[in-house]
Amino acid sequence: MRKLFLIGWLVVVAVLRAEAQTCSGTQTLTESSGTFDDGSGPGRQYSDNLDCRWLIQPPGARILQLEFAELVTQREVDVLTIYDGPTTESPILGQFSGHVRPGEVLFTTQGTALVRFVTNSRGTDEGWTLVYRSLDKRPPCESQRVVHHVRGTIEDGSGSDRDYGNNLDCEWILVAPTGEAQSPLRIDFEEMDIHLSDSLTIYKGYKGSGEVAGVYRGNRRPRPLELDVFPLNTVTLVFRTDRMGGAAGWRLRYAWSEPDPSCSGRQTRTASQDVIRDKGDATSAFYSNNLECEWLIAPPGASSLNLEFDRFDTHSSADYVEIYRGDEALELNRLLRHSGRRVPESVLVRGGVALVRFVTDGSGIGEGWRLRYEAGGTARGQLVPQHAPLLVYPNPATDHCTLHWPAGEAARLTVVDAAGRVVASQRVETSAVELDIAAWARGLYALRLET
Image (cartoon, rainbow, N blue to C red):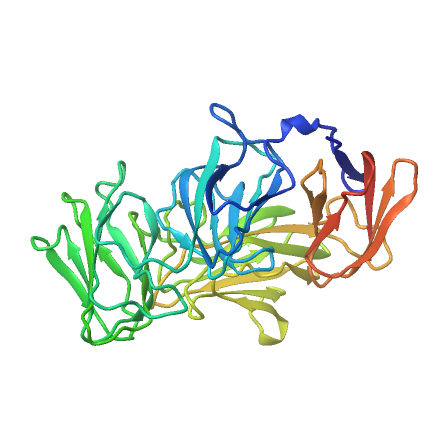
């Protein structure tokens, strides 16, 4: 297999052999069910700088069910993304990393899904395994299911396109995993629409013998719950419906961990590049309610800043992140206000000073967000300097690679081979540009960006 190595006036990379990669390119899976993984194999670890994709496309499938059998990756940097559709422009079903196998079963809304695995250059791990199967329709909730995960999502099972059914009697028993025996259970309701004759009941302990923590029906979303259930370390959810009619259903997230204090007040960052998180270095699953936090980014001598999010999950429109040009939260200088689960585009701040603001209320929480910033200079007509926020991956590559460049800063991309011949030239105006390099000959290439 040939390998292409992208170098440039901006970044120089080393030559690696293709055999070092555990996966590459795009694989298409057409069986009605199956199991696939990162490709590292038993007793081995996946490689650095991967960008691998699996297109799940069984003929005649209406929806797909996906579930993790194993997940062991570098947390927040080696990430598996599952899309509800065939491309990276499709809605994201979830982004996963770390050493905790996700508890939820994922369902697509169509018969196609794309799985993408991206790793960085700072370490590897044992990898992951996914199991999928095609279905004609989404199954109802199970009669009983025991859940041992640190955190996850539970829902009625109807999906987003239809109401739940009649005469259901479903039960979930949440048991604190090892190491979380004395942690409270945090429950955050994302959706709530239950017919008034049906009910969702939550017990501290087991059904019948445990204290009732809440009974829910109607379409008003409840406030979050925090349940101290030591020494039983168990919470039971029971969903019962009758024959009177269904409704859209419900969805909640849970976590066996107490939210950390998260951020507070204003922090100042003066490094030329750094990472900012909603929870600092805390490891809790969710951020806290009623926050108002600010980060002033002001590296000495910076003429511009590029801010790029690599994860984002906040509660509806009530919890949001704002980015301002300058050191004050003035409306006329606001560049971004964002909430929800979609990762926003990168933000270029001219002037070298930016203010990041995070505000939450008391109606619910999310898993939070993380951004990376880098200071640079982007004077018009000049070659982009080495510290500019440019990222190319995978590198080396085989059939495609992705170029990250800040949205809003249009530039001309030129690719030159080792003999000085121009093999590609195009205008770059978005934060992520995918290059088709399948027809390029093996060798070294240089990237040049000019604004």
